[in-house]
Image (tube, rainbow, N blue to C red; front, side, top):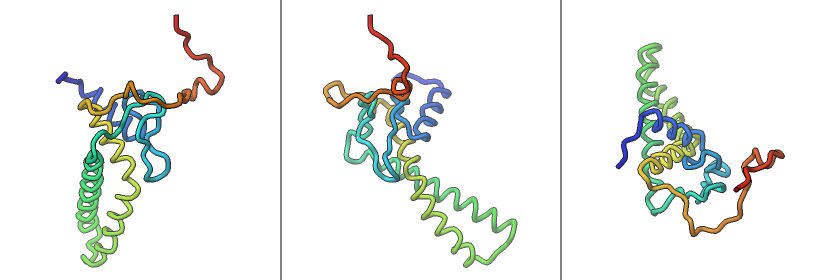
Length: 146
């Protein structure tokens, strides 16, 4: 296993957090709130190879939701001191909404982790229609092969 610099690792995690393909950094991973593309439209990198590859994203999502809710609970308790029942009515909806709206970003981070471990790569035998990058579609000429 090749050692990677921390700047590269954080960059790839940031790419996943922005919901871009960690391989080419061009393709979008999601269409809509919950539908994840199986492959990148530009480089054909397959995001999930096994049936349990999505579980890591769920772990990230739930762990961050619980951690932020716990820190928020103690911060609100120290600053304002409301009764525990009021806190329950604040933090349970927060956890539910956080897990729904952070789902895509947690899955994107997990795909980046999978990429860093070598589990996300282009499939050479996967045939798909080529979609030009946005710079090519705006009228710029693509690089010509010699």
